[in-house]
Length: 88
Ligand SMILES: [Zn+2]
Ligand SMILES: [Zn+2]
Image (tube, rainbow, N blue to C red; front, side, top):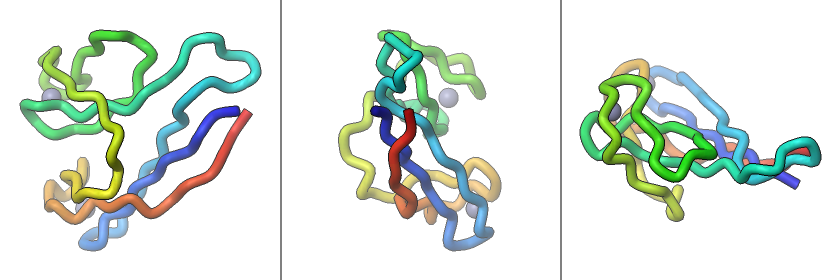
């Protein structure tokens, strides 16, 4: 079963959920990464993923979702972990 990790921006109310882990049909595990360059979040099953925004490949794997991230919409640092669930 996979894990849903979602973030909500407390400034502009933008929210985005990432489907992580493996579902029944997937064999590759998806993990969540943060770009070291532009701070954009990205879910990927690659071991060295590339940022979809700045094309940088220095992405950091996230284990801790309990910090503030950069909102992809308004760029404020108020993008917080607020949604969790499971998928298959
Ligand atoms: Zn980037
Ligand atoms: Zn925002």
